[in-house]
Amino acid sequence: MIKTDDDVLLNMPALHQVLQNRKIPTGLTGKIMSIPAYRQPGQKWYMPRRYYTDSRYTFLLGFTYILSMDRLGDFLDSITNYQGPILDIDDLFITGVL
Image (cartoon, rainbow, N blue to C red):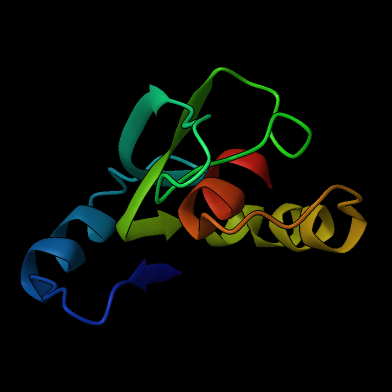
């Protein structure tokens, strides 16, 4: 399963070749980002500690990422069973928390 932003163009022949050669590992695949958590109120990506306690945001950049279908059930289970706050930073929430 592939998630892309609406302004992303996929090179479908290259993607097909990667998938045919099984070069995509199981789970989530994408460009990993790790940046300090924004703790100053008023910043665009501000996150209070009570919602996200780690000192860094570590997640996959949301322009494109791939979820292998063998892990879809686990991913859906994590969504169903998640008890914490839903974070405004969607890429962090989907790929870094869930």
